Image (cartoon, rainbow, N blue to C red; front, side, top):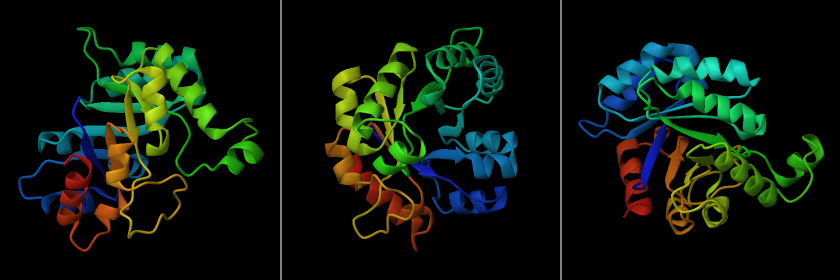
Length: 232
């Protein structure tokens, strides 16, 4: 599967999001719809962006008991998104049930990936606040192996872990990596970050880029810079 840049459209309303996408004038970037936009604009937002010709990563990070997640995934399977996700911390059974719920009667489904650890989570936070012991890289690798066992397509991780995950889970196992900034950007609330060029070297399959594009003076130029650095 080819590499691509996913633009995180973390906007407070439908109007702001569509005005942003209008700037691309015929270009159809892969779009991430996260919790902020989905809760503000609802499922109609997904349909409208899809009707415009964009691929969509619906980033809602489901995490609940297996039956609840399965039922929610049945709803998401009807939205014609291209990728969605859940928290791998919910366990293998939850992920298996989610996959079952997401799969349509004809056997088709969107890509399903598991969040390992958020890129805002540091080693200290994981050990001391979440009481998850061990090295953060080992924990992420273990979560990735659980995601693979459950039959999912890949993980959300930082680019820093992508190469190791491909080594243990295979090159076809997708790594979708937020925490990507240009060298001249601030890292904001992200802790484990790289540049688009470094993410390419570290074997990320997709990079998810928000503020470096959406807050740029020229978002289209920033997007094209990402594509050039990451895809070539």
